[in-house]
Length: 614
Image (cartoon, rainbow, N blue to C red):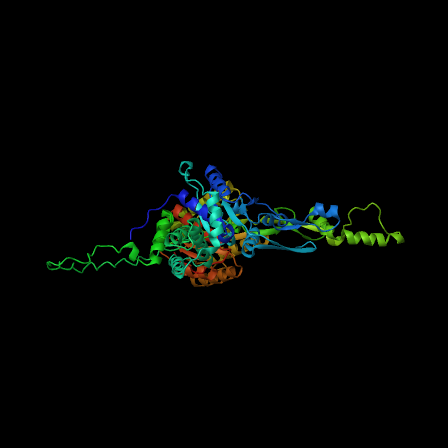
């Protein structure tokens, strides 16, 4: 069956808008990838016009506290009333409407988890600051993704609950011409949506399509079912037809596909050595089934027809990646950009407060302290009045703050990442690949400088290892140290590993992250004591590698010898490091391989892989 003609991105975006407007809470939401501009504004305006006039739309800013997001104690009203007064958060105010998450690629995982929990349970439970309350809320989410770099992405916990992924990044304004759906049509579809039925055949077709495309999450299939019912309701039907299932599958499954299913009608090619069959003898009878006749579309199974519609909607770039056997990048947390988030005491991004004593050097959270003290004011006032007869009451006191009320500010600051380059500058390396290694390290140093990471350089040659460059951000100093790096002498591989371990341990003691990149051919010939003994040198190197592995340092070993060495691969396995054999790569290829592997290791949170070859 010929594949259906692909629709324009704006037409698909309008279809997504219409389905989402019919069932915002059931579909969860839309991840809208687009920069701020007229195209995105036109889509958002169309959504507002399609929603009921009474539906609230609230914008959730990037830096928002739990009190404003979920609700809590209204401090001003509590102090005026003399009793605890609850404050409704944004997620409660948006009940029946849409929550716009601005700069969703930069929100913290904690905020994403709270929004996801409210979507799942359709309620917000507040148990804090001396009172407990339960607020029902049903809303949809539009996550605005403005990510400009590969290391920026919306948290996966939120993406998984959004039915649609819409990309308008490269769409020109002149193509955004299709109008938004009519509000009356959306209202009518909302009224008929509960009575729309989906039979078992359509259900099996959607489930089979998700399975064929490698989509494992059941949330995507549930979202496709809801989208198909919304499509039927928009068309004024009381049951889901094939067109509704195909539209829902295209919009929900296509951006999530992880593989291209095999064509069931494709026949294997005959062997090359087999001669073509002789032509059949002439026959006066008409040919009842020509060999080149394609199966009519109506004779194909329903799940195959739905699958064809999805394959036609997969973007060309994603289709090429899938056909090459590569899966698209999954959403990553924001913690892998330049280091993990850690707690700080006096600087960084505010992260709420906790009970504490400000005399310990931490900053007093004044507002949170007053919030903690406010619910107890009536009781403390009665205590003061009861003790007034004994002359113990303090006159003129408006707020009674006690030691248990004190709250100190918490901060989160991003830990720096220090990339340690351990370069083999021995005679064998200088003869083979030291020039390429210097060029690759210089390119990687520039890349670390852009990310504002620190870099360090260790060279091992001759009698031992030397710290050529301690951790620094100075690119000029790093290049100068690298240019003056001499080559020659023996290979004290164990000493180089020991020096790298000590520096990585020093970096981690400061609270920062350390990544080790070792460039060597793996042919150590000097033992730890500096004596020339190849067998003892290899044994010392394996022992030093095992000690490095116990420290849990992320590591990458690049074998730059003219031929991949088994000894180097054993060293990498003992280190728990990634192993790359690049015997013919130049500086650019070498630095590119290091950049990809280090970025992958940082994104996975430091889980090393043993002996992975390339």
